[in-house]
Structures are given as structure tokens and as C-alpha cells.
Length: 370
Image 1 (cartoon, rainbow, N blue to C red):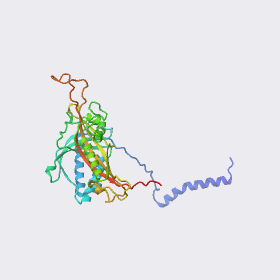
Image 2: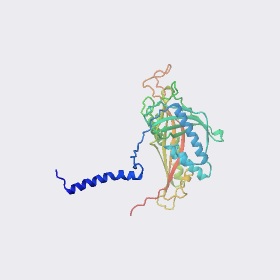
Image 3: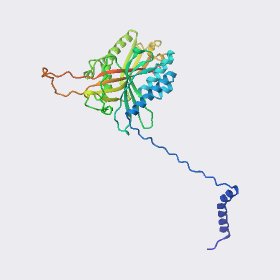
């Protein structure tokens, strides 16, 4: 092949350019600069099995950090250790203390009973329940049993307190079934061996609280301050409001928060859950533009003291525990001397309550278009 002068000069130029970096390096007396490629890798956290020791560690960690936050009045720190309904209630508690100029309440705890279900390590959320005597610091008369549900939603995240409720003074805490190794027996939310499927317990209580003792739901849940008592209280508040030229509407609904359920002795269940209660107080005479409903004392710390429109909306998160008895066997008669009689049907009972107002607003009146 005949090589022209032009082609020959191109080859020489390419060869010269290839030698330049080596020559420059030799003149400088140092190695050529190397820029390695940075590889960003992430490792997925491995699931940690929930054991009794893990539950004890996380329970103690919560108490220690919660007390540090309360001692310092540090709402931000407190909120990193709670979730679900406890988040809104914790924020409201700190704001109430700041509004009143009081320190946040601190507590002393006794020896806990930890109910740790045996769960698959790769199934989330993981959870456990603690039952513990608690009292306000310096007030021995305030000693009550508190039920606390802790949750872990994914590997590598922090355990948080999802729900906290207080056993009513006359209630007896049901005995949770624990195996030879100390683990509690969890229940499925759709378990049909109990009178009310656990996932339906919140709705049953909300129905009784809204409709009263004549409700069909009252056939499976006992009357009391936390069921038919809510209904009676709402009726009294409506009558009082009407006497003052006001309207008042209360609605109790389920929440999106988790439900925790544990097997108890004799086939029953202990169910922990939350409900929302929303109340609207308005002016009966809507034509009177100067009339304003009063701000409820329990919501003063959440509002600026003025009512923009003609309604005050108050939102509560309430947290409960209920005993759900075993479903009776159909067609079984009574014992000796009771032949032919149908034994009294058992009913679920709400045994613990806590919570309160977490937000409020006074929406502006909607203008009717001309």
C-alpha cells in the first residue's frame, strides 16, 4: 500500500500525542494522578428478631429518653420517641404546659409486665405491650396501671410508643396467655374465636357511644362510662348548648392507627386501639353575624383567643383497651338446674382510657355567592 505524505504526518502526530502524558510524568518525577471511581453502596438493615431482651431494652430506652425530654420541656425530643396517636397527644401535652406556664408532668414507673408476641423476624410491624404501674412524680395517690404499645415499622428504624392508655379504677386487667419461654400469644385482627373480631372492636364502641343503649352493637359490648356514658354526655351537652343558643355535634370514628391484640386466659383477648372524637359547636342563629361560640377551656391553648367564623371545631384522640371474651358455643344450654335456658351471653368491656384534645380550629364562614 502506498503511503502518502499526509497520512504519514497523521501517524506521527498520533504517536506523539500518545507519548505526551508519559513524558510529562517523567519530567515531574511523580506518578500520574489517578482518580478512582467512587461506588456508592447501600446495605439493607437486617431484621432483628423481637425477643424479651429486645423488648426490655427498648422499654427502658423509651422511659429514659421520655423523662429527659419532660425534664427539659423538649417537645422535639419527645416527639422522636412516639408515633401514631401518641404523636398528636404528646405535642398537645407540651403545648398545654407551655400555655399554662407549668412544667411537663414527669412520672415514676414500677416493675413492668412485658407482653412480647412471638412474631416472624421478617414480618413488620413488630410490636409488644407493657403493663406497668405509674404515678405522677411526687403524687403517690395518682398511681394507676398503664398499658403501653410499642411498635417497630421496619428494620433499622427506631422503636416508638404508638399507644398509651390507663386502666379504669374498677377494671380488672385480664391475664394474658404466656408460654413456657415468657412469650405472649398474638391474635389475628380477623380472629373469630372471640366475641368481636379485634379489628371491629373500635367500630363497635364508636357505634354504642353514638347510638346509646338501644344500639344493636350494645348487645355485644357492656354499657359504661366509655360506651353508653359517652352517648349520655353528648346528649346533655347538646341540651346545654341549645339553651345558650348554640348547636353542638359530636362524631366518634375509627382511626388509621394500629390495633394490638393479645390472647388472654379462657380464650378471650386484650385489644388496644384508638378512636377520634370530633366536636363542632356553632351558633344556632346563623343570621346573627355578631354571635360567636365560646372557646372550650380544653382547647384554649390551641387557639389564639378569637373565633373567625361561627363554629369551633375540636379534635380528640382517645386510646382504649378492651377485654374481648371468647365466643360462646352456639346451642349450649345451662348447667344442672338450668336445662332449657340460654346462658347469659358474654359482652366485651372497655377497661382503659386515655387521650384528649390535640387540635382545634375556628374556620371562617363560607360566603354564599350572590
